[in-house]
Each structure stands twice: as structure tokens, then as C-alpha cells.
Image (tube, rainbow, N blue to C red):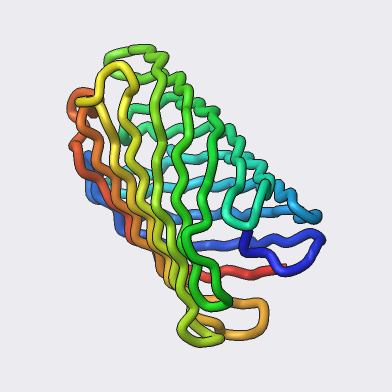
Amino acid sequence: MGVDSAGWYGSIYASMQVQRTTKSLLDLNFGGHINYFSGKDLVLLVGNIGLIQGEGESFSNSGFLHLRYTHEAADWLEWEYFTQLQYNSLTKIDSRWLTGLGPRLVLMEYDNAQVYFGTLYMFEREILSDPEEQHYDHRLSSYLSFSLRPQETVSFISTTYVQPRIDMWGDYRILNENALELLITERLRFNIQFNMSYDRVPPPAVPSLTYRLLNGLRYTF
């Protein structure tokens, strides 16, 4: 699970990003996470809110809240259950609620390198704006995740998701999330993130490919 001992863990962060969706933007992000680990069980809560400025406008338009429970069934197998609520007006998402469950396989796990593969069932309720639409879809959410720690002061995590609709395989999303952290002090880290999303069937007037580049500081506790 990537946690060494039982107890509470967490972090808070602030970051700045350059983003391209329907506009060129400067995006300030604030958020954090907290988790509790006990034996074979891990509970994780993650939140984020984005403050956007660009092309003469200033507004808050994106955020998410993610809750996940992981149970270690064996050294090589974990079960995951999650729910998530998000919104993003730039991609015309008034709200998107996700919930799902499934197995995660531990392909490799060492002190300085871990590789995981998961394949989960996911139900999605999505409300879009301009024009107003509602979708209720069943998807698979398969992902490959790996983390590297070549030195004590450097860590890198990359996760790629593929999320097709079960009843229409041509409607799929590919998400790639990358984070590089450099240790400044025992609890303070410099964080660089690059996230990319490809939506095969995006909302009207929203590009299929979007990305975010973030630079910021993270404080752990």
C-alpha cells in the first residue's frame, strides 16, 4: 500500500499551473489529502480547488473530492472501493459523480520501486452545461501505476487510466498523471505535476486533448 506503519498521514499543497482547455489560463490550485492506515486497511481522502484567471476573467471553476478505501487481501492483491465528486466549467462539467470497486494487483514492490495494475467497474453520473445534458454510464477503469525513488530526496509517480464505456467501447477516456517531488526539508517538498486527458467523445466545443502543468510546494505531516 506504500505506507510503512499504522497511523494518520497527510499533506497540504499550493501550486501554480499553465493550462490549455478552451482558453489559455493561469491556474492556482490548493488542496491536500489525509489518510489512515491500520493493518491491512487504508482510507484516503483527497480534495482540490482551482482558482482560474485568464483572458480578462477571474473565477473559481474546478474542484474535486475523492474518497478511497483499500483492503489488502494478499501480498499481491488489494481490493479498492472509491467515490468521487468533481466539477469543471471549462470542460462544461457541472458535476461528475463516480463510484466503483475492483481489484488491484501488486506487480512489483520494493523500497525504491513499485508497480501496480488495477481494473475496476465504475458508475458515472455526469451533468453537462451549454447545452444541458445528463449521462448515466457504466465504465471500466483500468490503470497502470508505478513509482520510483532513485534517491532519498527524489520521487516520481506516474499513473495511466483507460476508461471505456461498457456498452460503447468507442466512447473512452485516457488519463495520464505524473508527479515529480524533490525534498527540500524533512516535511517540505517541491512538486512538479503534468496531467493529460484525452476524451474520445468530449462535450461540444471542448477539445479532446487537454493538459495541465503545475509547480508548487507540498507540506507533509
